[in-house]
Image (cartoon, rainbow, N blue to C red):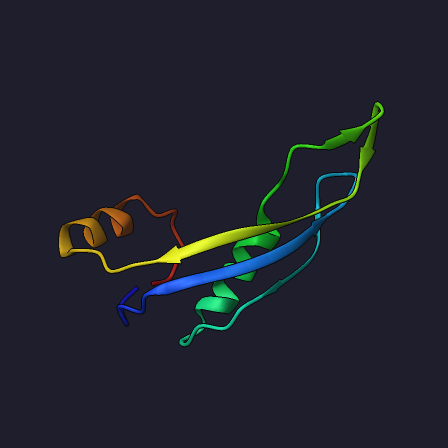
Length: 87
């Protein structure tokens, strides 16, 4: 965010029958934004995908949009971030 990089990172994920991300891969953006998007996707939990009453593995795409923000918005993000988050 500090570098004011803009763009979209597409992260393809495979989610297990137990709602955990098994793998994630991405497109490339500079300054580690691609890595940040993959790390975020790996931490997400998903609702089980059920076919014929049984949990199933599923693949999908998550889009992370990085855009410019003004100073007030940046201050609010920092203020509301959990302790230990580094920007």
